[in-house]
Length: 349
Ligand code: FES
Ligand SMILES: [Fe+2]
Image: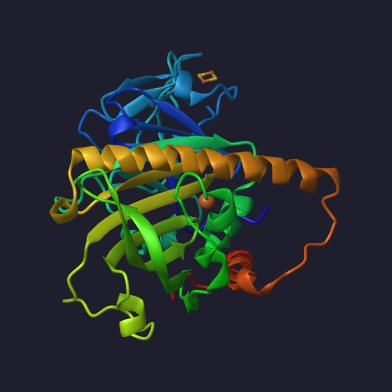
């Protein structure tokens, strides 16, 4: 499994990180401990004490530092050991690796690669709970499957017609039409009209709409998708051109999703979804979250089953078909960025 380490990986929801309580997570096979220090700043360290390798996540937050609760070594936010009980000299090698970390858009983002290249401007513009325009709900799921299979799933919405016929009520229009797929410096963009879809309305009903679906998938697995619906017939009228910004919409939602590789065979999937304030309320948000819970369980069932088949014969070839274009572009991008990392080339666009 290839991991792009020079990227911002989502570790957890910001609101789930309680002050003074260390949180342990494995990210791309690295054991990481994250805590919110007394000042409110978030710290991420290697979850392994230099002394006898106990997990620091079993330790105690002290101000801006974390003390290992095996034999008491204390580590500052930069990873430097500042106290060895009963020993005056602290060797320079007494250091925990510290990771660049940013609290933004309601997620805690950790840069797993070269700290010198950690540029917060590379954090994809997810919509968090601090955005006044959206009424969001959230959730997360753990997968017994490699993150790559979830990336593949999210880079090809053909499966909506088959996996999500019940939950999203998606029809075969999703499989018959192809999105326009565009390579971005650190992701892939997908855009298309999907005609005649049923959408939940604010008063609890369903209405037929044309859906403008335009989303981006960024390394290391961040999906950002605004969806706007228009009266049925709009796509024909525009001859499939993107909708002009001032065209009245019947509904607008936004979903932000993050796929984090925990190990080579396990992953965590974070998601939020909800309507724009002008097109919805808490009740619509709750209905959408009910649909999302059902839909994402459908993906999990399929992908974990797929992983088991792959594991039986990992060398077995796959058969590429036309709707794999986005999947292929994203995987090529990941391979290129990982290669550049190994060769020490810049991560800049
Ligand atoms: S293992 Fe942490 S102080 Fe001994
Ligand atoms: Fe899906």
